Length: 176
Image (cartoon, rainbow, N blue to C red; front, side):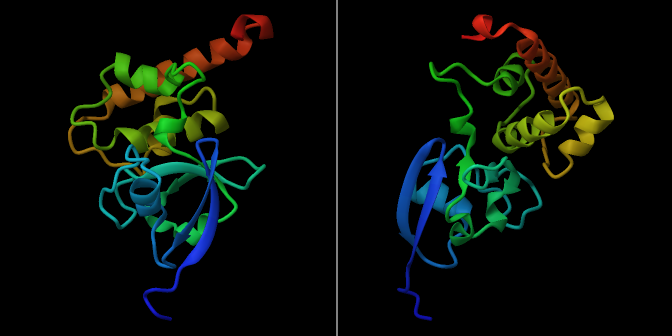
């Protein structure tokens, strides 16, 4: 296979369908950043150890789960739906509860790991809306932070969990 061989992929990213030609060995993280401009998805270690590149990915109509985009080829995402940290905000640019909690509770220092932590936390809270501290730590175990002691990160995830539970309890008219 020559290095000039390209493959057409169609990926729904943050609610927009993108059709691009990519090199077969292009990692999803590089496709997101370099071709689609989704620079909130961070290139960390390129070995799937740090989790900084975590995004949510699923079938076109199926549930999304966190994946490390440095361990997924762009061609493997063909036909998939991907949500990046940029795609979490609400229609008016309102931050997602997890993003807001990370900001309010200072769950970051340098911020490099933050996008991956947030995306992993969103996936965790979708599956477990009321996690214990130990479950939060386990749910984020694939994400490394070199700056913090993780305590503010755990507090932020717990705060976001409470906010999301409260939001789910509101009557539908109140959430509009």
